[in-house]
Image 1 (cartoon, rainbow, N blue to C red):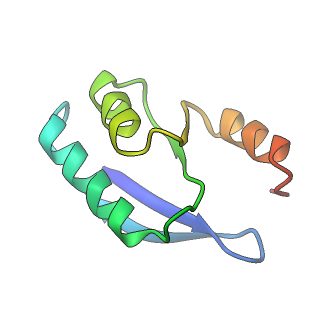
Image 2: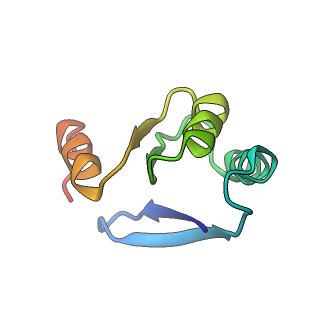
Length: 87
């Protein structure tokens, strides 16, 4: 299951997209991420928290090469705090 969330002006998360895919399927993962990229405003920073799945990691690197990709919410919070965004 894919869940895309955004952080609003009050630093609250807001769900923006949901997707279901067959596990370890490169086509479905890439399709979802491409649709997500089309929906996002150009130039937005993107952060991913995922399981350590090679297919998902590969798709993220292909579709969002400049994004941050971590495996825990703790690593994401650390990344956000270094970027000057309060959590």
